Every structure is written in C-alpha cells, then in structure tokens.
Image (cartoon, rainbow, N blue to C red; front, top):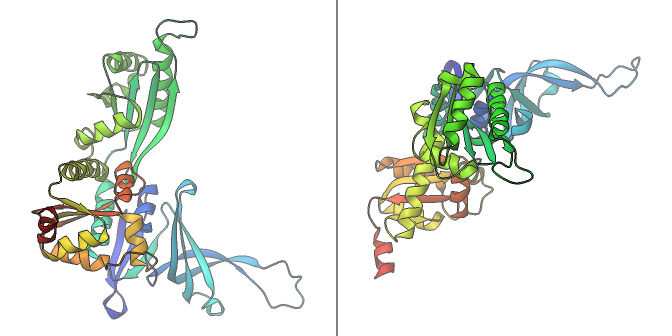
Length: 362
C-alpha cells in the first residue's frame, strides 16, 4: 500500500489518498472501509441522455470523478478487485448526485478515503505499507509421491499448485525426478523472490539437489526446513517455526499461527484463556486480557450492525488497548482465522483468570 497524501476533512475526519499496489492491499481496504465512510475516485458510469433526436441505446458510459458515501464493500478475491458501493454525494456531473453507484478499485488505482479511523484500522494500513517492502515468498512442501506449492499472502497462504507422482516400487511408480521436475518448473514459473522448501525425511533434500542443478536461477533463493508432513500441515509448521520471518520481517499469518496454538494450548489446560463474545467482554472489564484475538470478517459485521453479539466490540477493543493489552485481527482467509471463527470469532489470552472464571472453577 502506498499513502500518497494525508489531510483532514470535515468534522475532524482523516483523509488518506491510497494506492493499493497488490491484491493484499485490496483485501486490507475491505476491512478498513465501513458504511458511512467517504471514498473518492475515478470511475465510469452509464449516463441516460434526454435527447429526443437520439435513439435510446440504454445510455453511454462516461468517465466521472465521484465521492461515494459507502453502503457496502466486497473483496472480489478471484477478480482482483474491491467493489465499493454507495450513494454519490459528490460528482463531476451534478445530475448524478444521490444515485447509487459501485466503484471498482483495482491494483494501482488511486482513491481517497475520508473517515474516523479506528486504531486497529490505522495499524492495518501501516502494516500494508510496510509489507510493500517485503519480498514475495513461496512455500514448497514435498514428500514421497506428492509436492505442493503455496504462495504467502498477507491474508493467508494459497495453494498455487500440487503434484502427485507415485514413486517407489510397483506397476504405476515413476522416477522421483519426474515429481521434482514438475515442482521445479512450477517454482520457476512462479518466480518468487524466496522459496522455502520443506518436508519430512530426505525427500526435500533430494528435491533441493535436483532443482538447484536443473533450475540454476532458483539456487540462491531456496532454503530448506524440516517438517513432519507436506501440504497444509507442512505449511503450518513452516509458519509456526518462523521460517518465513527470516525472509519477511514478521508476517501476520506467522503471528496468527503461533497465537492460535498458544490459545488452544491454554484452553486445553483450562488455563489463562477465554472465548466467545460475552466471556471475552467480561474478561476485558476485569482488565485481564493480555492479547485479544478477533476475526476480521466478524469484526466488520459487528461494526456494521449486522451481527448478533450482545456486546459492543469497539468498547471491548478500546478497553483492552487502554489497559495495555494487544489486539490482533485475524484473517478469515487463513486456517488460524477459521479456527478462531469456530470459537465464536473472538477470544483472549489472559494475564490472569478473571474473578468470574475463578468462581466457575471453584
């Protein structure tokens, strides 16, 4: 994310002119923008003409500069765009005021956002700005007969390719080099700045030797890591061990993977953890929360007034921050976020057991 200008609008609202530089940035914006925010940008709109001499063709598209008061935001992940819908409250054509419109924001489009930014939203934008300097990373996991390639995004990891080639003995077995060749070709095509090659046993080492010999351009970009499995489980181990952090200073997903493991361990031990909106809000009242964990899509739903929590999530966040706790917003696109969603979408690692939890155990 690039912030090209800063300023202030009416009623003390902050104005930021932003340029999303990749799909990750569009995803970040989807969790920053809320109903009532103002978003300005260039767009096209079909204009109906009142001209008796002109055949009605349904209107012609014209370029406009609009300011929308946001109603809805959708991250169209597979279309690589952000859809911002709302009412036109400012426009280069006055006859379009108060009409509904959708602004399609793509990579490198410049928009200006005017709103009262919440602390976690400001932090998210700062993370996105810093992440622009991080190199692209791919995680390749390999075991006998199978290999997988995942890309590391800020919203999670995504499977880029998978290969199965039965190796060993038997009628349908194939030389291991065929599997390694397909893996090397995929990595060469992906052209990541860094590749983490992981897996159990010696298979990954043999794959490393083959790829660095046959694909010389990749040789300086590959590091190897021991994991107990390939695929999603192997990727989780890579993230948990901090291997990605050695390439990217600290990725949010590596942090999330560690925190969700810490949380589940505390829950399993009946120790310093709680989950669910009511229990978390209660722990916040006692000042017991060390780290608050909340899923981004659920946070957004609650802030828009469309959720069913009986608590005010903004009050909980402000309470935790006021008392020196950390707030971590998890990506719903990544496995730890899915685990957190299964716990109600919000949880906390505690400094100590709150009084209510102590009484429940007594």
